[in-house]
Length: 448
Image (cartoon, rainbow, N blue to C red; front, top):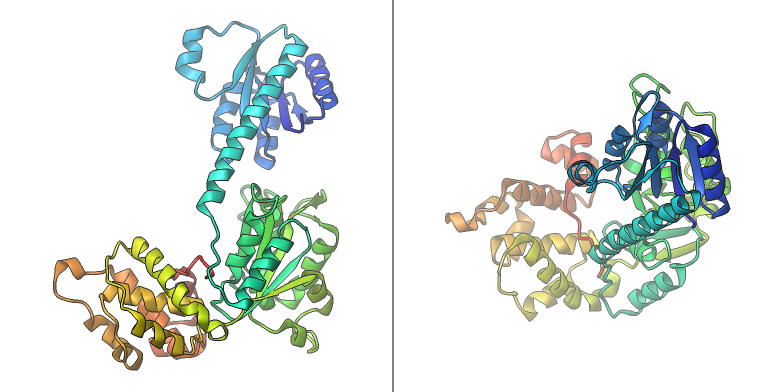
């Protein structure tokens, strides 16, 4: 029984013998004797099965049941009581929330069997939930060009090895999608895929975000918080835009990658993460490591055991027709817009463009056509303000203002060759506001 079990009972003799029997069954067991200690353990750890005595010296096991109900991966709960719980009480209060209850004096063999059954039930339900998430995150990489076929082959080869992967390519080529494809095709697919944009985290918050912190570690730390390495344990941690990471934190990250060990801020105990690292960058890190203060050479070689390079869209123009049709169908459903596909002439024009924003820019172009109901060949590119004249006066054609603003910002950003400072200046907003707006823009979740 390879499960994690928490036993909470103030009857020390029974608890110790129960814990020993569970360990002999190959379960990972933690135990305590009080309500408060149980709360502390539930706050820090996840369990497959929890066994609570209803009557504890400083609280009630029923309150602990409520605590488990709020957990993301809720454990199965078994209650222990010295008195008989009648069926009416069970039906009205507990049946929905607990797996079973056991009455003292306990038959140890029977108790072990019920814990095992509860662990199996929790495993099956968790597996079904993860499977549903996997189905919802099906990754489709569309394209027949040699470069994309090579990427697909690499994904298959890399899926079931734990080696770090560095994904390179221009902005908008689908680096996060490839990272997700590697994760969801691997044996880690049922474990978390945690993504972080390294450029969006202020340097002073890097440690708390990656390593977590203990309650009281600093002013405002009213509760403990898990860091990214802990959240991704057993799964994949995707470090997007790793080239933007400060030199100071690069050294701290390197130590974790080499040993897997880290400490929460304010904590004394060493923690260990088995998260697989997949990083992505649009920079040429192999050149930057040669410039002092840019990117650490030792970290570069640690994260780039294997590299996957994604071609720019202009380098795979033969994929644009199939990619466009796929995104057209996908975005039509998302926007709930029924618009006739513009045709082959439009596809040829799309193939002739340079696409500095790659797939993201293509998706934005398709979304604009779906919003306006027609192809606008010149006016939109020459005059960004023309976006507002594209709407008809009929109520059916009105599009939410959020979409219009988002498309306008994206268009100006592309016209400025994705220069954030210039874009912010033209729009008359601060650089931080622009970065926030760009983070919230919808991005195609498929590399095609």
